[in-house]
Length: 145
Image (spheres, one colour):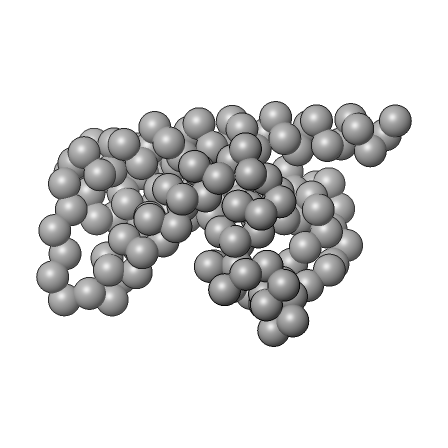
């Protein structure tokens, strides 16, 4: 699905968000990242992967919300990041990969998750959240000019 289709199907829509909502999404992202770390510590790697995805998803939503976009589709969030933030496309690819893994963790019959999947995800999610924070701050500063 491309970005145009996401808007045509109203899976992405224009919406006005306050800065505090954007900030809360970054807080949520960090909370889920902390949960992922706790899950790894307790050797619950499947739950860690779910938390990694959720952390990255909330970080991505912070970008959408900052841009005045409301989402109703996880895949459209990935599409939006890839098309509107091409310099973050590698993170969007990882987000999509963990989206698929999350689906398997929640709905699959056979779940085989390695510690490396969880720890790698934690590292990438941490980097992505940091990149999102920079992007949000930069865009706020630019809009004030």
